[in-house]
Length: 433
Image (cartoon, rainbow, N blue to C red; front, side):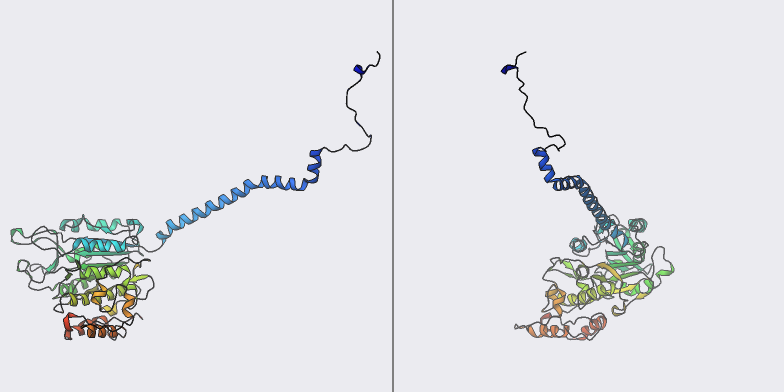
């Protein structure tokens, strides 16, 4: 065949050098120049899932540990269970202690969030145990259902009209089913039985705050004077002989008043004095100076000191000095204990970390120159310039230099002439040593 232009090969010419390396392409040139960066990038991409997994696993473990600590920690430390038992909801025959619902709701408010997790961090209102039969037959089981541990604390607030039975000669509480039909009172329960039932738990410390009511004279009940606290002196000291459930030696009772006294109320503030003092003590005022040591835990001696002095001062102020009211404390199984002889470090409940808005008409009203913050009671105030300035200035001056125990203060105060216009000249208790 002849070589024609059409028959010539159109393949591209290539220069092949035998024995030489092939020339790299453009892509190969890029890879060759950046082989270190490319490898690092691939390693980084290849390692990122593992890093994310490690970080995620670590965060998960931290979250689990935190949740477990928050959930389990309360179970390993002491907790306080709080209950209220107001059995003075009388239908006929007796007048109840005034301001029942306001007193109960006030205590519930200040304790909300600080009670045992087993009770939802709140106060348990024993509204199904207000009749005499329920108290005798069912209250013990309810307290035992709380499953209290040895290190736990039970706080109970009880209110009822009380008197000494003329036939059986022991202290009686009138329950919600109280009646005078038939000529003799019914619906009664022994005070010692209530204490025994509330002490049915296995915990070491129980404090029962009991408002004994305001019956000072009632011929229908055979009562010519209120001697219930005097009778409790003998009943509580001997309670260990016939106890059924009570952990004697670990249970305490503080009552609203002493013998020949009764529980007072403030008509202007719509509260009973004992309940309000108890409420403020649990609010954390009892832990502050001069009542306590400000360690964040409200202890028995701090609470008793605060309630005793404040209730007394308020009773003198509200009655214009005509009456007084001294809360009393007993160690069940031992008897009455003076306020200044209560052992320290008996913890009741942790003080709140925040301050509730309390009525400004209370502490500032009964303590001249003071305020709802007890720490301000010890601060020096400027002398008042009105007509009542002299009693107020004296009360403020003596507040900073107490020289007597709470019991001696209260007794000495009764012997003093009344200040002008019913101003209360009180002194503060000594700080804890």
